[in-house]
Image (cartoon, rainbow, N blue to C red; front, side, top):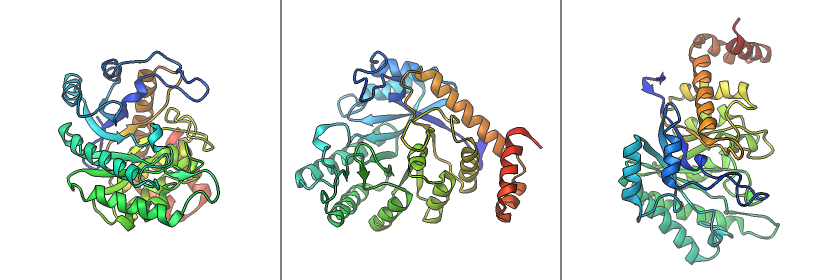
Length: 332
């Protein structure tokens, strides 16, 4: 058990991690399809995993709610968030909250509200909104001001629907649209400021921040600076040019050390959730390895002299900062 800021670290992952994974070149997937029950069984084999994120519409709905509750009870999991699916169906191809069709916008808002009602039935207080289809591909394709007004007004309707459920907005610079409206930390914080509701915040996906050429630790710090807006975090890794959703620690180890430090510094006490796409790898093994990496990174940071870290940061010296990384990893 790892304790930070007086609270136990809790690990979760998205249930889909244990299922079939496919891309646009292998549309049938690289593995056999699994039932929800089989994915729960696979998740139960991950050491230290306590939370599961579900995709609302694909994995949980009004009809199977009691069954999901039974599964989470049988396997001893909590539901850490529900990801509202506003991206995988053709109805959203020209946007959900930003669709020029008022009927589609209302359908998207009502779907979010339905899952805000479902979440507490599963003991969950967070829904995740990733506006993957809300954006544009070509010039002269969007009225940007009108689109952002739609975003603000739609989010406001959801946030005020019930204040006991939090809404986490997950940003991403592109994919599947060439440009996503909610693309980076700055745009997302601006959006939340405009909405102005306490129960709406940010879900920081590490890979999305990397693709936006952000420093992950700075993004965490900005969430704190602008009002404790970090509600949830998705861990993975990539090479920055695409959202590869790789195993934690694959590429950005120094940045990860700084990220882990700042999560402690801003007193983040939410889930440490793993969001990876193990296309060819076994999901259980991949999530196990992610948790091992997170445990080790936390140990390296927390066991280091915290006052020394502060001294290095306050010095503003690049050489000292790289010495710090080396000493964290390999000792003095």
